[in-house]
Length: 184
View 1 (cartoon, helix red, strand yellow):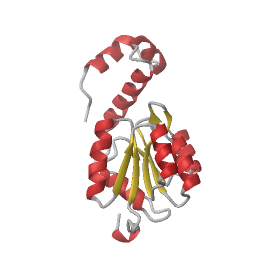
View 2 (spheres, one colour; view 1 turned 45 degrees about the vertical axis):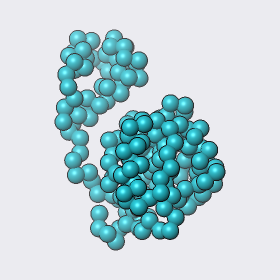
View 3 (cartoon, one colour; view 1 turned 90 degrees about the vertical axis):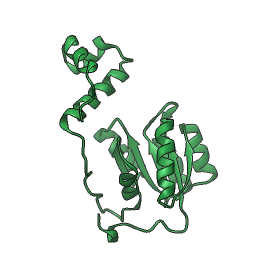
View 4 (tube, helix red, strand yellow; view 1 turned 180 degrees about the vertical axis):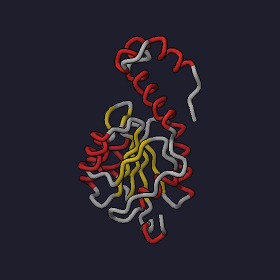
């Protein structure tokens, strides 16, 4: 993305990060602080909504699925308290329906995990309708397939038979895939 396609951070550098993955949240907070943001973190929907009400930030990065609910609730509260905030919704469960819902509620952009700090910064600071550049190292088709299988496996509470049924896959085939390391 060209420099003219990015807006400046501005005087208000406040950034709210909401994610229940604690190690990811700490790494992202450090990376965003290095980029000039004043970060505040929350590990739940309740904590994110409390911060959005008490100290509405100029920027926010919110995970879609959190342990205590949906991150879109935080986006909604933030839109009510600070309509000009630039919000990026992050998720490991990328789907068109959730992307549309996030944008309708007021998210500036929607990124699938794994997104790095550069992707997030570009999305937060992109002007108007400018599209961020494609990722430099996109996931391979094998990796996308593996991620999808892992997500369904987790949603089925690690039940191999139920996961195989939902994926329309033979149980032994699924067991072999789960036993292997993730592809690059």
